[in-house]
Length: 178
Image 1 (cartoon, one colour):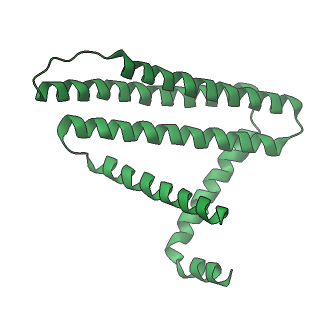
Image 2 (cartoon, one colour):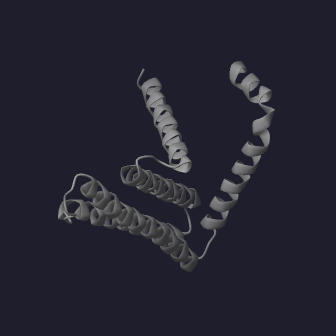
């Protein structure tokens, strides 16, 4: 514990980041947990719409990447339904997840007795939303690499961030299992 405290105290450059991110997240959670049911629906539909738009962009870039790769080998582009069905499956899955979490939110809001559960459900919804967006953006980057031969800097940075997060999660699971 002493080591953790000294590490925190020695990294003064992270104070502002820590305070601002913590304040923003707690403000969003407290705002969302005291909202009216219609506002819950608006936030939920906004999350769904953003995820849907990013998924459509991923589908579009995927078709462009497949067209470019077929053109390089001298073949004509043929639309394969197997890949297209996976895109629709992703849309259906995140639609069902968001609907399920919205249903839980409205039920908890109706009961008006379990505010801590509402905060947990909202956190889960936003974590899943961020996860879906990161995966879709990573897929767009892979399509860009297939199409142009290299990824742009934001997608390279995104890959490194996802790799770092995955390593952190794996290390945390390994420590928990020991």
